[in-house]
Length: 236
Length: 223
Image 1 (cartoon, chains in turn blue, cyan):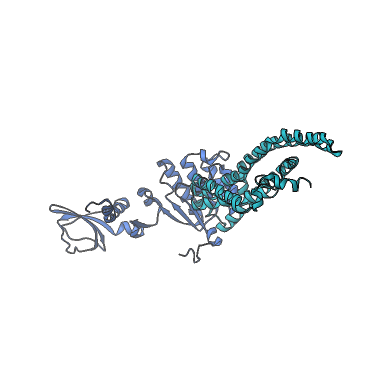
Image 2 (cartoon, rainbow over the protein chains, first blue to last red):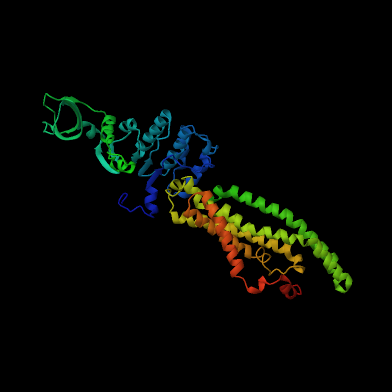
């Protein structure tokens, strides 16, 4: 694996370019936010303490209270401020908002967007909260059971997928449809999630636009469960 | 890194110092009392020799022999360092997930590990040296009863506790990297240290030590 053309393993130069916020935003709980900013200055060659302090002040974080006593949302803000203070070229966020309430989540993403808009930092963010992705991401990779299901620019992905509702479908080609991604059948009707190349002209099919959330759900809904069926000893 | 190590472990250092101060509160008064009595009962009387000297020696021994039993408790001191300084060093970081935070800052893991073990190991060595020196001072008058080269008494004074303490810390550190949970690391360090300690006592000491202390006493008290 390479980051900006360099191998990141045991490479402090690569570490300096990467900011990382781990899941559940671990921090030394007995340190105050102010201590953590000082710490960042000691363990990083490039460190913008003023940026960290400004962000923490904006987020309303008290400087002299141990971070273990702050709320989850406030801790996430502290972790993000620390990651941004490295002025990284790449910011990795592992489920940063998973455990936050909606208000804290919104605040977090707002701070994130504000922080990276100025510097042009690349952000790689993993999340299960689909609604947030549409507003914050340019590029999307959908993973399920360890495999890439879908990858592309968010606009393209939304643009090239449609839901078709029409008569029972038996696999015959439909004009304007590149591939059927998912199909659900009931009696005489079929609902298809398709990737289109142009307009679907066949009048038998009703064409619906999809939101990103619907689309991701469709891709994720029937993940591979053979292994767990086997593990539970029941038929798939 | 130095600041970080200090900030992270200062509370632990304070508790350790308090523990050593409590120990000093015991050994300083008893040590001074022993010296006073040794001078009064033995030093002054035995300049000329005779029955008065023998009685003085016996009286001193009768009064202060119980302290020799107390010193057996001091064998546990290095173990405490291993449990509370060694075991949590890496285990706590991993247990609380903070290794993901600190190991992704701008310093390498190697740098982190060397600085931490170096500084904490150094601090532990200094504390243990102070402790060993204190016990040597305290123990000196008791040599009239028990040679400092007998088992137990050899193990609690001078540079010997420094070695044991560093060993215990290294053992705790190793246990903490194998079992990255503080409690599990401590639970392993405890019996492993005791086992190593017994093995040293039983197999790595000269056989003469296991004979009665009286045999070696005659050779050393004269010095």
